[in-house]
Image 1: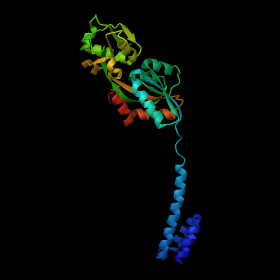
Image 2: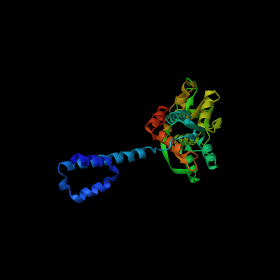
Image 3: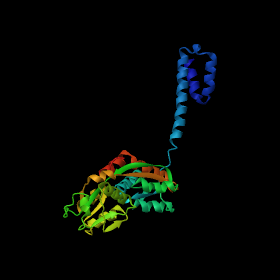
Image 4: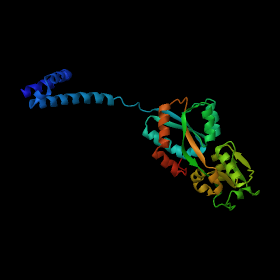
Length: 289
């Protein structure tokens, strides 16, 4: 009798609900012995049905990322973001990350003027505010790193520059970032903290341009970020100065409101803020947020 009951249940799994109801009406006390096998068969039937349903649900996986992600990023992020862009493309076949590296103020102006982009990574909260105030950001910007200033000199430091005050020597040619650019605003803040006045021979639109002036030996020194000195390697020499601690810049990143590829852009931002992203940025000389 027990074997016949089990076979019948296996052949009629689709009626399991009616069978359960029937068994409940008969009373569980009457299911001793052979009843345990009946319940076990019902359980297996339920498990099989649930498994079928689960596999159907798992087949509807999230849409795979594809297309181009356009990132507007501060010039000082060039080396580290280029590395992260390659890692992103490798992790998400079918995607491509393109960058526009420039002074943060220039990038912010482009975004508020309607330039199509997915992500904005600025070198200061002030330049990011230009974008958020214009309503062009989606969500709240998140600080992902910080950066500190350093003096870049010619290799070997032939002018023996050892402090920020040394740059005020009228014999020296010095380049600074424009005051509207984050690195320029930070340099001015450091000079104010030291009570110094400095008239450079040129103001540059981004930190890479200021560094290039040194590399080309057009100036004796420039005030740039530590990350830029590190990226330049043997082409320049870095000189730290204590006043730089008064002018550390925070770097915020945000998804833009009308991002053409918002799904992939969110994943790129997640990579930047992840442990892997932070290791790449840390190796470039950036400070933790």
